[in-house]
Length: 175
Image 1 (spheres, rainbow, N blue to C red):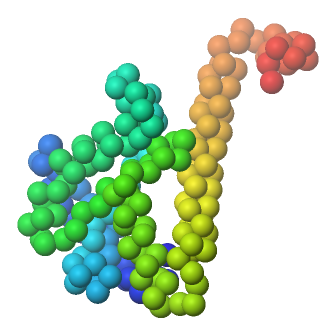
Image 2 (image 1 turned 45 degrees about the vertical axis):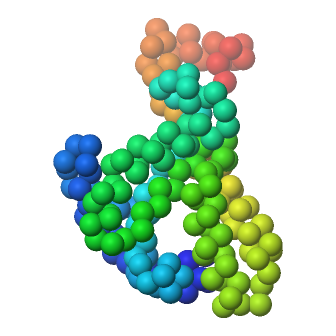
């Protein structure tokens, strides 16, 4: 999408995490471009689950994403502002929700891509919404698969013997 919009990726830069004082590297950075009024853009990605940590996160759709977004802003905004860069926390919920900041950022890139091509905004938006949603779900699937493998490995270690495990497997108790 960035390439379609004429935005070039830059080497991630080091920023100070204002909550811990540690130096962290940004996830992605775009070089200054006309698309963002001559400013460089720093992106930090996060995926959050709506009911993790507190019950407040699951009160409404997007609550978890907005809370994580605020945490990211607190962590990096001051450091990025010192360098006159634009900071955009790209926070998605595992169910697919993304915030207005993410939507605005994507719309900005898509408008620039439309200006450079013959594609319509709606067709590009549909395409990239599908791409991002599919990537999110593939990631969710990978995480679930890894967790299931770990659980099954632990379960096998807990069984008294492989004979007992095989009997349970044959009875359909264990898949």
